[in-house]
Length: 94
Image 1 (cartoon, rainbow, N blue to C red):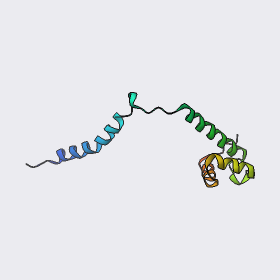
Image 2: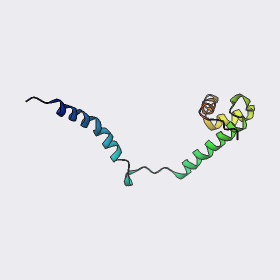
Image 3: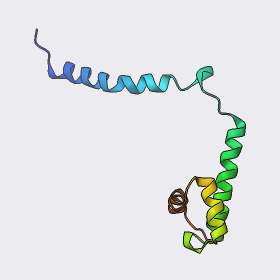
Image 4: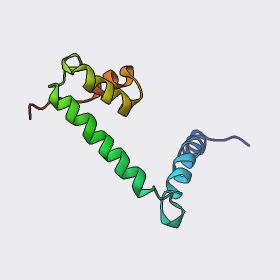
């Protein structure tokens, strides 16, 4: 039995689509994982604190005082992470 090109194409497209359908079908209803509200508040507070240091230094990590660098490193885990976080933010001049 010889398969024609349309049937082969349909089979390949179906195989490619199946993982997407399966992934999306599990993303609703009561099966969703609920995040701890305390953890969410902690993350928001941490992000706000990092942003305040960023704005204070006008986006320049080296402009922070040594005390601010230590406090920021406590938030991010290390000076390297602090510098990386500064690299992901945009100074808006506010």
